[in-house]
Image (cartoon, rainbow, N blue to C red; front, side, top):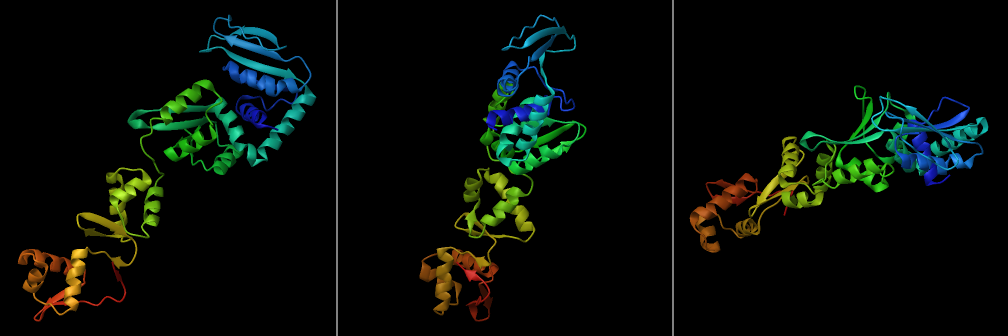
Length: 331
């Protein structure tokens, strides 16, 4: 077993005749795939393989090795297609054992899926930048589910489209990593062209939200989160507001920057820290703070009001007083 043979397992599972027990059969309209199957599988066995070529004009020619060629007319065919056959009960039995062996070894899953996608896959680019990978099937198959799960490819099965539907940049990244669309030349070209047009990372529903929440073990700005996740600040802001409405995180505005955190703490600027320091030294009047820090009364009053909103100070008949915090850190 090697990668090429495993790819042929995928090709055969997609477009081979898996019902007959007397011959190995593979159908495709791509000459490159017919050649791959011929040299990787058919030549392993003795016998005289045959190629049946179907085309609207019956003029398409395709010669390969020692294959016996037969040409037929098919007016329904958009382009010529070929059926490669080797009649042999023993070869068919051996080939089926190879298929079972490949499917039982996860090491070969990327190669099998690469072959299967070459046979039954398609690459779609629709409106609103909708990028979709499809794997045609009448109904879900256990071995496909197992391979997709093993490779970490999330998917749905659309009965109305009779296909597995794969979307999301994270799934395209997996396809790119294992080069799963590379076996069929036309699909390969289309895949890499569309993949190169992704502008930013895309995450499945709730994944970005969950990952942002995990990152907030320390205070971070919207800009810093946008850089980490390669998303726009507007998108990150939407996620942060959702988390804030759910009461999971809070934010603090410090010198024109908004810091977000899920920790039990209060963030203040160095200027506000000076006010708390002066309170500990006995200052109580707004005018005293203004004179000490060389600012006007209004500016000093605004800073103290902001500290009051944070629950760090209070105002009474004696003036401003600090509120001791034992259950929260002030940074």
